[in-house]
Image 1 (cartoon, one colour):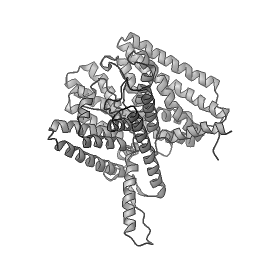
Image 2 (tube, one colour):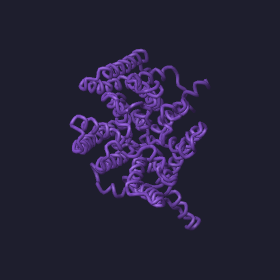
Image 3 (cartoon, helix red, strand yellow):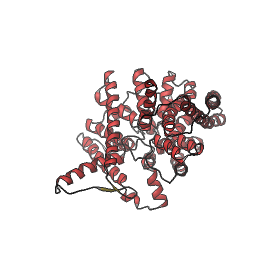
Image 4 (cartoon, one colour):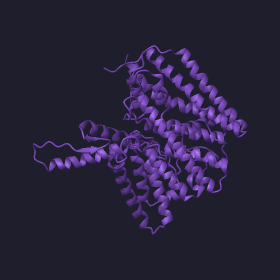
Length: 495
């Protein structure tokens, strides 16, 4: 029987959204401080307005909508899907006030791209954006990548089972520790440790390059947020190409890959067994897919007699695409000049994405690996006697059996993503864009990557902007929380 919500359910949901709105408002104080330190007068008030709007809305929701029901999984799923819409709308307010966006829709697109750790952008004149607004753009990726909803509600919600509902709703399949509170704390602990390492590394590279202390420090923070949280925003319009630094490219590759690795694997390597990195099923799948795609890329360039520097650019795009980050050291013109097979390799890399329970999007390595193993298992079954019973096994933190449940789940998510990839491409084609480029942009939005062939710009059709916003939202939450929410809303009409 499908549960049909009533007013008490929505009162509880709006109360939780009010709490989250208050939490989000305090994050807006960070760019307020940056604007104060940098003497940025207008941005200071932009974020003061954003802070006030978020805080006031939060307190109004808390007062008007008290919790009238014990928080359950249904509330968790609905809250997760609704909160990403709320966050992006509130987060768009100071961006829109910056006068760097043609419309509020463009600012909303930017905010959703940030919170969903995508990196597609509609900003105008990025090179002259204030420090405060640049800080906020990159901070949204850190908030969205780590999961502010989980971190907040694991403390606010007493029930462990309910906290697990928020955890699953944010597209995280595996608990790291026995309870979600411990899991959330570990994720944030890992993130802050890498934050220190990343900022020091990036600062050293940029300072030695002659960027200056203050600029190097700000850019180091922004680049870390974008690389580890696989977001892809950059403080300059040329993205990573602006720095003309091989050392920076190598450093960002390391942190992009770290962000694409399952947080559970981070835990095992840190606290249990460093050998797990060599045995893990997801890592083996990643190495296999990356090596295969690099070969495709190599042969596509080789046929044109391209230089080593061209292949360097192609390899960087491939790693950026596979990790779901979206950094680029090429211009859109250079990316469009890729051989057809090379561009297809980048599309496949974006489709796959990184590990489950990571900051990246896409189909995920675990699911793709299970699909590969399913083919292998079926071939072996055909080679065995009719009455033989065979179950394949794989190692992911422990030895696991390739059960029917895991296989079905892998194929279901694979189907969801492929359908959305194709649907977005068809919408792009309907507006006259070439099929290959429309598919590239659709995959980039759904898999939360952020690489673009030039379709994503302020002048593109409004419908296409809304489609990409939906794809970024659905891809980040991996559909389930959204489908549950839509099911609840539809059930209202059946009463």
